[in-house]
Length: 148
Image 1 (cartoon, rainbow, N blue to C red):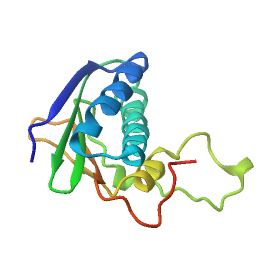
Image 2 (image 1 turned 90 degrees about the vertical axis):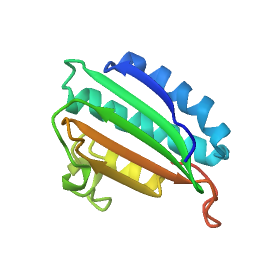
Image 3 (image 1 turned 90 degrees about the horizontal axis):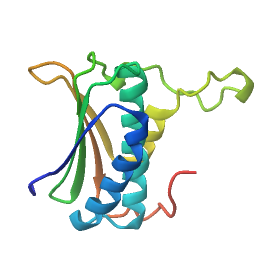
């Protein structure tokens, strides 16, 4: 595993620009192609937004983002001190539900799972959350574009 590049911010939606820039600047140096960079930018942006809005409920708190390469994968880790939340426990997104019956939002975790090869959660010893979004540096042969 390469030594990680790290960005530390306070939870604030105004810092999402910095998060996206960080991923765009670091991921290519770790072997991400253009498609993988776009997917990682979108996935990390979505997760950090969830941490700010739902984890900290707008009250603020620390967020640490690490990007590193491990073998043929790029790992984006987001750590926070918000109450523990495992995304695997979130209700599944139902794409067949008519638009007028869908609740606002509720697509973020589904989108992250589509964009990444793996999406993992753990609770560190000191509490909070650590979520890893993993993207292969080998482009899938049947994938031709980014998220719609």
